[in-house]
Image 1: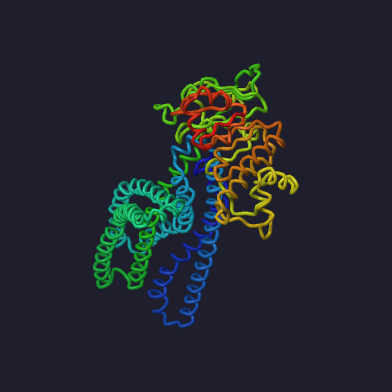
Image 2 (image 1 turned 90 degrees about the vertical axis):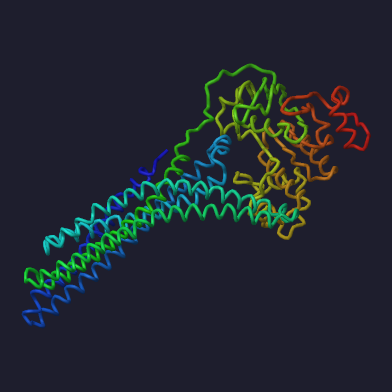
Length: 572
């Protein structure tokens, strides 16, 4: 993956062109005080009005050329900064989508959002400002020093004497300020996290009357960001007053010494006027250099954070593993798994499923039901044991090939801000007939056809204009639309009534006979007709079998069935 230097390289030619134009404009700026000194000292004493007008016209031409060159170069700089940031943000987004679940857990979603927005903006500012001021300011400083050296070497020595002190100030302050901006970005991550939580959970916050509590939590986090940014900016802001003091003290000495030299007839008034103009130019350029250091400090911290993501290596590598002969389609062989490599979330998960069989998983919240699905789809790698599909270890199957086997509806899945048909199609090459068929099998066609524009009806983000049951039926239809080899419904029917739930299961069995169904549910009625059922407790398989055997041999399953089905025990 490319580093920040690699992203700049394609634009070096455009930047070089802009630098040449900027250099030309800066030279025009530097000529103006020199021409003014020449007019005052050499032209005016001749009392030739025509020559004064000629040199005045030359100064006007230089001013126009300087203005044109700076505007043109700045537009070029803006274009490079825009395109550079577009490339970085694009690759960063692509990389984020390619990160494994483990890497996402490590980096955190709020931090990634901050890197895609705030950090790329800081890089945009730096690239733009370096092209605008990174050439102009040094040329003004060096050119000003060289020209003043030819005009008044003695006075120039006073100016040069201040530069080492200025350089030392910039170095010491920047050395302390750069780490502060790195820390600031971490606090911004926390702020994004709080905002994201509040926006996502706004209904819960309002329902529990916790608005004031969340306001205080946000204010506390926001104040921490403000304090950290203030501290960092105060530190970097020390450069300006120290530089002003040094340069203005030098200016006082220049005026005193210059006046004495003019009075003694050693120097000329025009040179002193020009020298003061150059001193002002140099002072302004030095202020711009301090701005560059502040912007660089922020961008340096941001670049490190962006590169941390871009340079992440793919941790779910495809391995060369032998293909085994097996009578089973899906196999979990003594699988153990831990998120933090300390505490096991799943322990000794061992079951086998033949092709076209159906599997139900039931258990208390936090028992590890969804984690089994995440391991099957290889969002995470197992800590020990193995998972096979058709005799192939899933670690030996290409990620795209593996994921294309699945149609899945997760527990907290997402409806996108788009039409009904596009939410079901989801970027796949599906025609309208296939979408309509998937909606029928997903028990969604009835309510869709009653919508104002039916399949063209626009849905709000997260399905805000749908009920819970309608959202689930759209999501199930999306999972069915691709005729997957393995269909996973992770608590996907919790908002459906018993009748719709039953009709859904019947439609899947009837219309998708080649599909292996895995259903995670809280209701026994949703899974009781499936071929195989796992009962999980604290990450372990408490019991497994079909409904009839579990009713006889598993007390917990039987208690759930009795309590949920009104005390009646149903046999399949």
